[in-house]
Figure 1 (cartoon, helix red, strand yellow):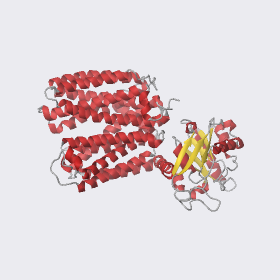
Figure 2: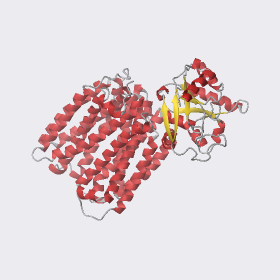
Figure 3: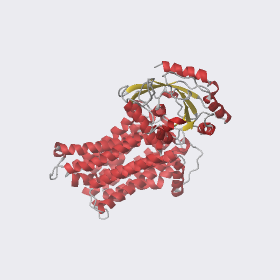
Length: 634
C-alpha cells in the first residue's frame, strides 16, 4: 500500500510528495526573503519621499495580499480545469521572471519597480495556493492527508522564518547587500522550478470547466459553492479566523518586543522564531495525535489552547522585571521572559493543532471537481479576515488599548468564535469528546480500520458492550457516523445530550412504539441514500453478561430497504473488545457507571474491524459469527 510508511517524514523520500514539498518550501522562502529585504531597504537604506519608512511594511503587505482578493477565484478555476503539475511549473517560470525584474530593482534601488514585483509575487502565490492544496488529496491517501498537510504547514512557517532571517542579513551586508539579495531570490526561484520538474502529473478534475474571467461574480460563485457543504464552509471560516488570530500577534511583535518586553530588534526576531517553531511543532503533532486519520477532534483542543495561552501571555506581562532596553542575551537570562516565550510557543502550537485538521477536512470533504475553487474561496476569506484583523488592531490601539490588552481581547474573541462554530458544527465537539475518551480515559487500539470505507454508503455492525460504544466508533472512523440506537439510551444524562447532538436515530420495539420504530428505519434509509455511514448494534441492547447476544432481524430490514432504493451498501462487521467490566459497561453485580476506578485509569480497550460483506450476504447468523471471530482476536 502506498501509505505503509511509518510517519509523515517518510513522505520526503517519495516522489509524489518530496518535489512538491521543496517546490512550495522554496516559494514561501522566496516570498519572505524578497518582502523582508525590500522592507528593510526602504526603511533604513533608501530615502523615498512618497513611501515613508513607517508605512513601508503596511504598503508592502497590502500589495502582496491584493492579488488574493482580485484573482483567487480565477486561479481556483484554472487549478480545477488544467493538469496541476503544468500549472505549478508555469507559476515557477513566472517566479523566475519576477525575480529577474526584482533583481534589477534591487541593483538600481528602484522602489517603484520593487513594489510592482511585490504585487506580482502576490499574484504568483495566488496562483499557487489553490493548486497546492488541491494537489495533496490527489497524491496522498486519507491516512496520509493529515501528515502531508502538517508537513506543508511546518515547511511553510520554517520557510517564512528562514526567508525573513536571510533577507534581513543579506540586505544589510555592506556594499554587496542588494546584489546578494537579488542573487538569492533568483537562486530560490530556480531551485523551486527545478524541484517542480520532478512532481508527478496530477490530472485535471474538471477539464470541461468554462472559465469565468469576471473576478467579482466568480468570487461570489465560489463562496456559494463552498457554502453548499456547510461543514466545509464553516471550516473555511475557522481557518480564516486562525489567520485573523495569528495576524494580530505577528503584526504586534515589534511593538510588543520594544514597548512591553523592553527588547531590541533581536528580541522581536526571537518572538518570530518561537512563533514559527510552535506552528511547525503543532502541525507535525497532528499526525501523531490523530493516528494518521483526518482527526477534527483536535480543533477544539487547539482553540482552547489558543485562548488560554493568549490570556496567559497577557498575565505574564505583569511580572516582567523593570529594565531598560535589553538585547537577546540579557532577555534570555531573565526567567520571567521564559514564561512569555513558553506562552507564545504553546499558543502557536495550538494554532497548528487548530488549522491542519481543518485543511485536511476541506480537502477530504470537498468534491474533487471543484476542490481548487473551494481552496480559492478560502484564500479570499483569509485575505479579508487578515485585513479586518489589521483594521481592528489599529482601532484598538487608537482607542488606548495596550498590546497585552489586545492579546487578551483576541483570546476572549477566539473563545466566543470557537464556541459559536462548535455549536453550528457539533461534529468538531463530538470528535473532540471521542478523541479524549479514546486516548485519555482508555488506551484505544483499532485494528483493520482500513476496512472502514472512506467514501460511499456502508452499514457498520458492531457488538454492544457499553454506553460509550458509539463514541469509540466515532473515534475510529475518519467520517461522521449516524447511529441507530435504543431509545432508552437517550435518557442517560450527558450521554443522551451527546447522542442527540450526533443526530443518532432512536429506535424502539415495534410493539411498544410503532411510530418511533417506523421513523427510525425511514431515517436509516435516508442516511444510506445520501451515501453516509450508518452504525447499528444488531443485538438490540447492551449485553448484561459480557457475552455476544443473538442478532435481531433489524439489519436485514435496513439492507432490504437500501436495496429497494437502489443502494448497495456493504456491511462492515466490528467487535469492541475488553470493554466489559469497565465503568461505562454493566456488570453482573450491578449497573453501569458505578465505582469509576474499578478497572483503573487508562485501561486497554480495542476495536477489530473485519472485511466488508456484500449486502446480499449480510444474514444475522453469519454476521454474528464474523463478529464473534473478531472478538476472539482479542
